[in-house]
Amino acid sequence: MTATTDLTVLSAEAPSLVQSVDWLAIAPVVITAAVGLVVLVADLFLAERHKPALGWISVAGLAAATATLLPLRAGDRATFCLTGDPEACSYVADHFTLVIQFLVLAGALVTALLSVTAVRDTRMPAGEYWFLLLSSAAGAALLPASRDLATLIVALEVASLPAFALVGMRRGDRLSSEAALKFFLSSVTATAVSLMGVSFVYAATGSLHLTQVADRLEDVPGQLDTLAMAGVALTLVGFAFKTAAVPFHFWVPDTYVGAPLPIAGYLSVIGKAVGFTGLILVTVIAFPAYSDVWGPALAVLAALTMTLGNAAALRQSPDRPNSAVRLLAWSSVGQAGYLLVPIAAAAYSGRDQIGSTVAYALMYAAVNLGAFAVAALVARTKPLHRISDYRGLYAERPLAALSLGFFLLCLAGLPPGIIGLFAKVTVFRSAVDAGLGWLAVVMAINVVIALYYYLRWTALLFRTPEGAQTRTRAPWPVAAAIVVTAITAVVLSGAPELILRVTSGSLFAQ
Image (tube, rainbow, N blue to C red):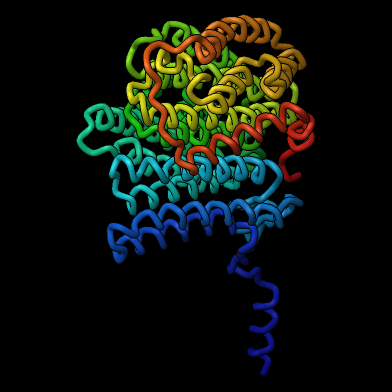
């Protein structure tokens, strides 16, 4: 009887090793992944004529996953926490997580709408395509919630590995195969470097949870300081690659040209969001003790990235095949430089500066996906993807031309694209507040440089067309993608404080 009583007391005192799971918190990721598996299995049993249904199942799944963010809007949930330290959790659904998950899932939903027609017209294998897209979206949605280095790297690879295959999905296309191979080799190399960095950080701190890593890096023994510093630097390399920051940008133009157009748009927005999300988490949450290392490094990367990206976009010849996609690719590199500015500023004036990057990313996602949607529409009759193909688009497709013109003005930061101007001012202010006046000057010069190529393309839309115009009816999923992104950009331009309200204050759980 006494032995039984003692065992009962001991079991009551011992901490439980079983972690509880908050299924609502992880619902956006689980639904996306589950629908991907459903699509993969259904593909085995559906006849070829019924394969388009897979696309609509994927669209519905992404819409459902996006809707599950509404019950989480309080931003106060966490799961997979250590039983001995409830503050150290592997999955946190705070406001930062929810905003990025909305960007990822809504962006993937627009990509899916563009893909419905593309998969059918190019005869890509439907089952594989939709499974890979949903798998990548699930990994991208998991990444902002990840709060330990192991989950972070796994989420990064789950988001990236399917993207390699999606880039090379056009079988028999040399450009597509080369793009996928270049993307794969360079990404794997960057990931290997990051894994080495994570191992160094673990050796120096004895933990993988970001909050514990941050605490232990504050007081690293002298003999381990060099190891910890090397780990911090190497960990950042993989995420800098995903953001297309110079000098890790070389894969971008060829990858965008070789990929199916919806996937190029996906990489330009969701792929970039993955990189910036990981970069934010490891810098401001895990490595604030080494802000004197990553702060100046990111400031220099930001200056180099925006300068090289805009200079290369400026050099694109309108009559060169694929010049429109290449301009958008180089433009995305330049925009990555702007997105890096608030992260660098966070090293000097606190992590609340991160709200500027999130605000800019939301604006960029809407207008850049919209630009790719119009490009997908134009490519149906002019598959060479030249900038000159857009001459006189207003006479042929007035609404598409007006939408593209508005998207380009938003990217340039000119009225009536007020949301673009608002986002650039927000980023500019973060640099000034952090005392990075030189970086603010570099950004201002680059904004002026970018005006030229954005306005040149915009003006071309309204010039007199050359030759006969070939007009086909726009597929309604592509039209819907254009309308959704255009309405979003117009609403945000009319009320930019909506984004400011979402991204102001602390985005992270305290």
